Image (cartoon, rainbow, N blue to C red; front, side, top):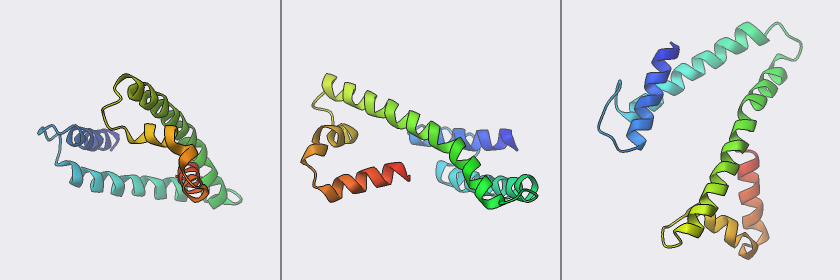
Length: 122
């Protein structure tokens, strides 16, 4: 199953890169299949590994948090740094993330709150 999920993820990546190669299927179908398999694995993990523990739901979500959030923040900061560097090197190319970084002081408090909230809580 791990190989199948890898091939589905590869199909999605190639479709995002606008390649016409199909590893298994087209990208939008691969996304749906990947989410269904991932949902199955998440439920299987919850029902087999966590159900015997005290407070299984809390421990499950805490484990998911520790698995996802560090990589999210690492990716976010890497993208922010890359975006700023790219904006400095190529100022004429549209760069949406750089506009947030450079123009955040010009946003009102509600726009800044929305930006912060959506990135902290994904």
